[in-house]
Image 1 (cartoon, rainbow, N blue to C red):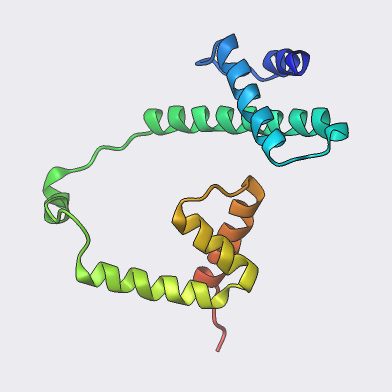
Image 2 (spheres, rainbow, N blue to C red):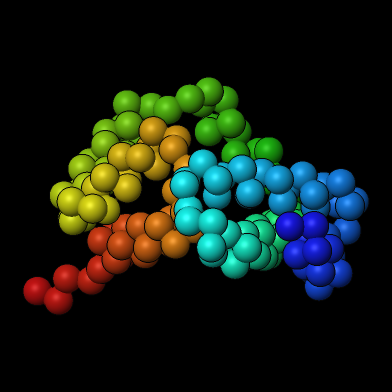
Amino acid sequence: MKPIIRKLMKQIRIKAWDIEDYYQEGMIILHHLLEENHPSTNIYTKFKVKYHQRLIDELRHSYAKKWLHDHFVGLDIYECSDWIDAGGSTPESELVFNHLLAEVYEGLSAHYQELLVRQMRGEELTRMECYRLREKIKNILFSRDDD
């Protein structure tokens, strides 16, 4: 796997990482692939794809942090003083959250309901599962009723 890691390390450079970080991420991904009991015939291809996706995710994450840091807008304490001292959720916000959660849950198919439950439990979903679930939820919350 080391040649794959070295080649991708040259293609996708993450400034905060050194060579050991690349190898460590490679070992983690290889461990996950071996745990999933994939047939060994395609293990190199699957490793290369998953490792490439992981590097791209990390690069996007680092750019997002940089963008947020560069575009940070400060808060005016006097305008926000009423909710800064709130110290937690209010019964009204919990009621709205629970109502929206029930509405979203009812609008999802059984497969996406199961994904939502897994997400709320803190289980890790694949990138595609997260994307599709997020799009389904957006469609439910922001769909326009033309009645």
